[in-house]
Image 1 (spheres, rainbow, N blue to C red):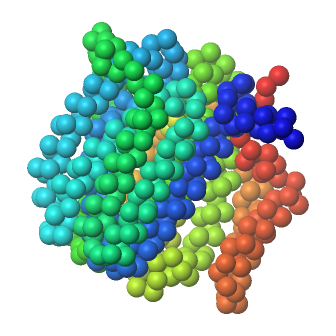
Image 2 (image 1 turned 180 degrees about the vertical axis):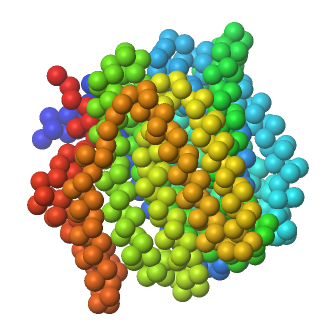
Image 3 (image 1 turned 90 degrees about the vertical axis):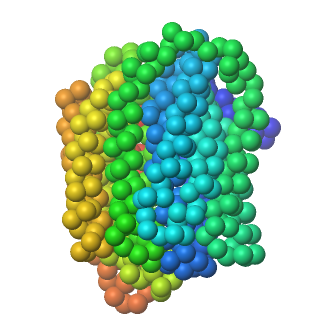
Length: 491
């Protein structure tokens, strides 16, 4: 028994091989983030019910502003640090110190602009009052997540999982206390900020040895190469920020706090689902970078095909099933007051079919050091999103915003997909036929179960069993595809 425990500890906490490292990192990121977000979901759902659509709309809008300006504090510096440190471990200290200096400069500029410009983004007075609190939250979160560049460069995602989990515990506990004692958007904003601050302190304490020489190892000769490689991300960050947060900001300009609350309710579950491809791609990133750097094109093609197919095998049944049970699901999560969010939620589910594979595709483009294509794709997407938002939101409200998001995501991910095929001519359609068939059977069964008035929990379980059973019956290697270990075939 002791031997088994030691083997398990070694497997989960040490990097011994290519396959084991990817499996270990995927386990920690998936398990840690899943548990953290489930805990945070308790706060999200509780705050939505306690604050009502208007109060929930105010706090959601404030958090969206912080997320929007957070794009400018990084401009690709964290990903660049991870990539360059993985390629040149001996330069980790120099890259860390120099990148940290640039990040502090960007943070100071961003906070100043946020404090000055944010009050002009909305006519909702309650949201404007939260801007200074959000600026402090942004500062804590930027410094906290900077530490994860090191854990990712060293393929030690177990550290990131534990520290993220702790931060979400801080935020959730403090948030629930704030809502119980004095339910108000401002008090919840303070709870978010204090919880994030505690997470920041914990990260720097745990990684204190990694940050030795943070100031003394500054290398001014690295400034130019870092800025040169990062500048596409500066533009991409701006455009990406518009892509992610434009909807909420424009809704805040044209519509009421009540509609902001409805949109947040529709959007929040979708954003949680976006974690799947993000975690998947993050786990693959260091190893994919290594394979690309070794010019092992056949191995890279195999990884692309299997990873894109695996992530679509998750997205497709979730999208179809979610659209069918959209109304009772929204009611279950947020209450009858949020029924107006159902159509928007169903529309936003369609973006899973675009964002899931798109996230993986984007990471592979980055491993090829071809990130400049993101400027074209996100530029077109962001422009379309803003224009369509301005046209659709005043007339169709939050549903119009969801349509704008779908159209812009089609263009962004379509451009990136075609570009990666030029770099490495992968194929995925032939792998998806049985998955599509299994999804269709599941969708039909789910529709009839809903029509019969079956409890939604039973429907969810039945849908999963039906999809898995049909896939197994059709001899679809879905389980193998979803096991990340199958992506890498080591001799």
